[in-house]
Image 1 (spheres, rainbow, N blue to C red):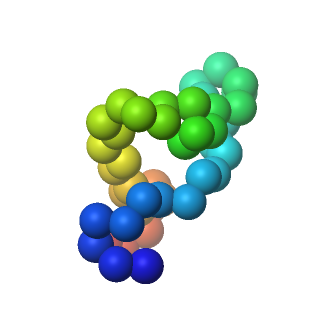
Image 2 (tube, one colour):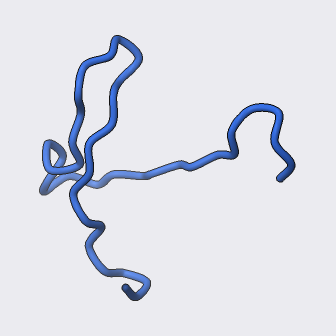
Length: 42
């Protein structure tokens, strides 16, 4: 992948345990924020 490429579809659970897919936001601007797991360096 290169900078600017479309991200592949993936599924995660929201705070209520419901599935959310990236596909649900197609056509909208989405900012993804990834952070390290609690109690890990970095």
